Image (cartoon, rainbow, N blue to C red; front, side, top):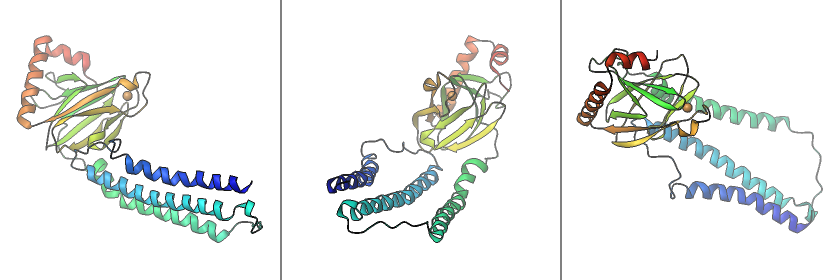
Amino acid sequence: MNRLGGIFWGLVFLAVPVLGVAVFAVAPAINVWLPKDISAHGYQIDSLFYFILALTGVVFIATELLLFWFIWKYDAARGERKATYIQGSHTLEVVWTIIPAATLLFLAIYQMNAWANVKMRRPDMPPTVEVVARQFEWRLRYPGRDGVLGTADDLHLVNDLHLPVDEEILVQLKSMDVLHSFFLPNLRIKQDAVPGMKIPVWFRATETGGFDIVCAELCGWGHYKMKGRITFVSRPEFDAWLDRKYSEQEATQPVAEAVGEMAVR
Ligand SMILES: [Cu+2]
């Protein structure tokens, strides 16, 4: 390769870390960054994300700059030094195996509390609502006026999940057909819905408003349209909404029929 070729490839490799850093610097400004966090636990997930991003980012930039420097400095066209053939370095292999292994082990321990909060420390309460995923919608079941799920007066809805703000929520997640994934980007929640399993999902929203429910598991041809809405309102507004929906359901169908048709266990 001639001298110009060496310079060209050096600059191409230099562009990788420069553009890589630029993407991360610009993304939050043009709003293609993490969606707004409205959950009580989300800061733990986000700080883990930023910590890992910083760790991998520093290593990425360092190795890319080193790569550029080596291409530049040891350009064959300059012919300053003849390449020597080496068999490899056992010490180097051991060192660069141990460092990533130790880093991963540290991360595994460091994230344990966040994992326990989101997946293990389940609040001791009956489910607020049952979410049943199916191709290609979210079926919702609220305990009716008796407050117990699975009875004749349950309230059935599709895709339109309302919940009270500032309260601990326990969702009972199921699937009617295939694997789906219950993804609430603004609540930093993502949980697979597995056929045959009842999976508890809990969170507490700190803000009112409407947010997306997305399916994050490719579940069939209509996966793209498997979108729901989660709306957080104050407790009085929630009770009023629930009451209205309940009256609507009672007006359109007898209670017993609704259960026979839609209950999934
Ligand atoms: Cu799905």
